[in-house]
Image 1: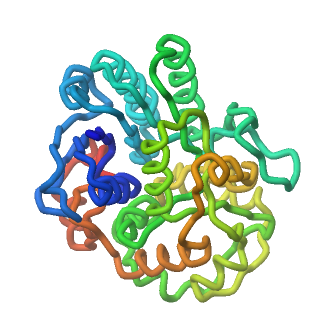
Image 2: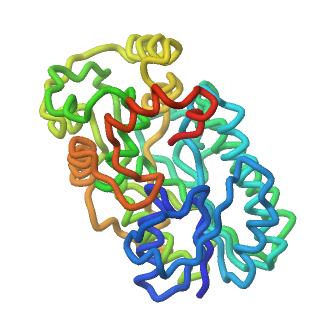
Length: 354
């Protein structure tokens, strides 16, 4: 098959492209900044440069023409203070992808949603795919994921002849995303080495997070394409990650701090632009439900090859070493680069750096 992949150079996209090429598929990659160098066979990919935050439906239509399926992964996390841009990219970009897929006559669309689209938990039990996708309203990420799901709802109603699948994974990680994750979570001038000497981990012990490896997400995508599957699929690996797992992976000591205090600190530092993680992420961490992955197992035969603790340890190791891949989105994080950028580029030109 010929498969178009949006967001093909990111954390999930690189894993999906690797898997599709290994499966023998032809890949049309779509990214705002295609790679200049090879990453895992990227020379075999037909690249289209398209910024989904702009009017690029014609470009997308060209990239999708002749494709059997579109896998829509593109999303944005930064700049976290520019919510209008993030909404144009995530929600408006999803609408453009769907309309371009319809115009190109694509038969199968796979949309990357998130467990972040789910309504808050009401108890400790994991939820299946029937749980309401009304989100956590205090989180911009969750609101945008919900709005993207509504775009997919409308698309399904308007194009019943197109097969549509949705993935709702937990937190996705792989070693090569280490530099990218550091850019999301640490101020630009803070060295990665700080993660080697964290004295304390101040979090509420109630934290529970579903985690899954990027390669296992790619495996689910491959199975969906091979079986022409439709509907929603939760993805996560065992065990559920707790503060004890986080402390062990970071080699530090957990200190109990109530979630409202953690949120207040996140809000204060975010509004002061000391760090880039908005307080809505704290709300997600403590309000979202765990996910039941039985449907992916029964309908796709999907089983994660990497457990959640191993994925966490791999991600932490990648962050500590500023691990990277040969794509702009996953480029190596350099303190020198950050210093140069801070002194030579204005706030407007810096806005869209991931």
